[in-house]
Image 1 (cartoon, rainbow, N blue to C red):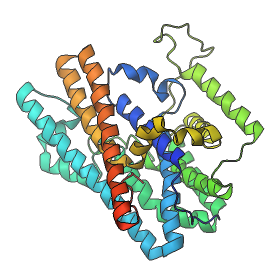
Image 2 (cartoon, rainbow, N blue to C red; image 1 turned 180 degrees about the vertical axis):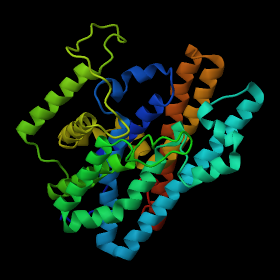
Image 3 (cartoon, rainbow, N blue to C red; image 1 turned 90 degrees about the vertical axis):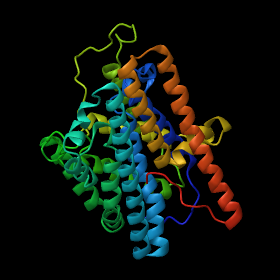
Length: 374
């Protein structure tokens, strides 16, 4: 297996993560007009798949290097500390959300039906939530990352010593989650499973880990095979035809067959193939590497480098505007403000955090660890 000695970041990963963060923010605000332009309208997969596979790539680049350079004890410590950090952000998001919604309920009446158990049985509900057993609809992403990153030491060992066995086992678990949708963790709030079934989504994370190995083996680029490139473009073209909301765009429906949206919870095969095609074309393109170094890309790159903090802020802004939309309706003033304020705040936070990293590096001679999810 390729060794990870070079500490340089890949700006393409940060650019794509920043793009995914902005897309997730837009999609988390119903009635946001920009949702018509996000990934989910142009294919089977959306920004969640993009972010998870990039999390696998980033985890291998960061923690695989730590295991090799500093040993198992240091690597495990770094993974554990990052899992704890993500968990604390999740807990902070939960408590902030509950306080905000409680105040809104006091002033304007009931809101957010999925949070009702937290106000009816607060001690019980919060204890379940802190145990990652109760996941509100808007707070179900970070728990997935806690689980995936917590599994990384096992994934790393499997990829290093028996990659085909590790990949086959991961694929078998993913397949089991698609065959039996009860193969999932339970969400206490509704008695159903996690919206992002970790038994299914771990496969995408593992593929990201393997992708980092392939990138390292080939000098930072995915090998470009003409047949696979053509197949990827053809698949994405087909997914566009079947998934795009043609009539909502005011265009003739180009679908020749009816096609139900593929299951997201269990990461349906067509969604998996869609994101693999996207990532293969993106990380095999020299143009993306050049683009990631341009000044225009800097706002997205800094968001991707500090993804945990940026994601947390975006989640809170999206919550505020969801409530405002419910209270006052999706008037155009709010629709404009949510995107200007939300995306602007994300970029501003990313730039501020990056400025602090640069200042720390100049003062101490080495950068502080990025605040990204992985």
